[in-house]
Image 1 (cartoon, rainbow, N blue to C red):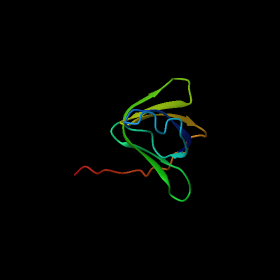
Image 2 (spheres, rainbow, N blue to C red):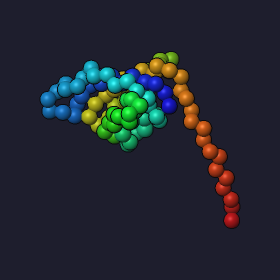
Image 3 (spheres, rainbow, N blue to C red):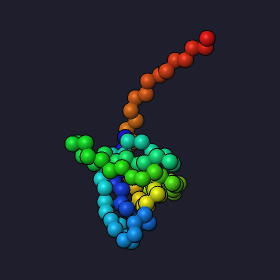
Image 4 (cartoon, rainbow, N blue to C red):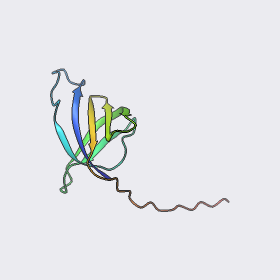
Length: 97
């Protein structure tokens, strides 16, 4: 989980043009954006969240703390505000039978 600010920089899914462009969403990104799945940002402790349409493409620069996420309807610029906090994963043992 990481603290992130998402700014909508393009809106190509609406007939009204640039509705919502420039809007800022601050919260916590639970998992790295994945192509084919909606991106989820939890916005406050009361459970409000922002869910996008499915992600089409994820772009980043090698030495930059920004990430660009293109969804079916929009493009977001993500800026990371804190260090990544990794949730502990449980080890799963598999047995061959």
